[in-house]
Length: 332
Image (cartoon, rainbow, N blue to C red):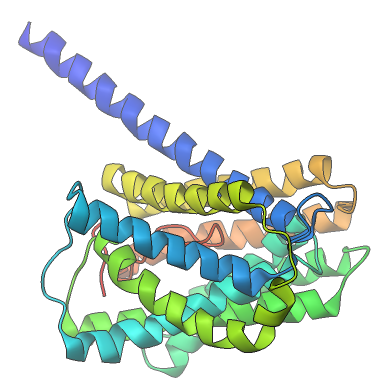
């Protein structure tokens, strides 16, 4: 009887784990298409990536406050001080805001599929910056992995039929900002050793990112949006889906390991690339596209397999589908 109960409990845990992974892949993929539709569709016609990102951060800030301080269904971990907030949260939040802003802006110029292909270069940016500040050690194996990823992205870019260099610049800017965010987090983790769960990170990071986005929004998009007819229901649903994505990442990293969610992220990227070819007429995948992306993903898979062996200590729940959760526990 006891063995039977243990088996049932094991199967129940397995079902919960797989269900959480499927939920994360579904929400992450869906949010990418949702953002693309909101930003570039004729029905909504909301070409304001800065405003959309600001809305996401503001919505997340309000919901986090309600869930943790009003209804108290989630707990914010103690340990945050003014000194830590100023020296750690603000610079990381600024890079986070920049990542989301530039990444969403790229959707106005390049296809979802090509955007995902360019994001495969992220490990290269993180590694180069890590080496420059002494967080990573240059080795023949890592150099080979970075070369494979770079070669794959170059081939995929060469195969892009309608490449828009403005969109590429925005996307690469978002990638560099994300790499800087991760490097800053690792630096602050090693210096301060403060660990926060993803919910606490959302609680502290969202308002900071919203403020960082609000300042440029006033000068760049505020006057344009004053004449726009708001689709309140659509934008509210879009923001809610973004928040749900964050919770799904929190669920996955609490049920699985860092390597598992990375693998789920690779599967999600392939789903996004292939489904975008079906949903958007502007997406024209070529054999060169797919071949180059396959090479890049092989390099990313090698990186994912190598990285946990070196011990990874940075984590942040993403407010955007451009990222995956990194490791259970969270650290700042």
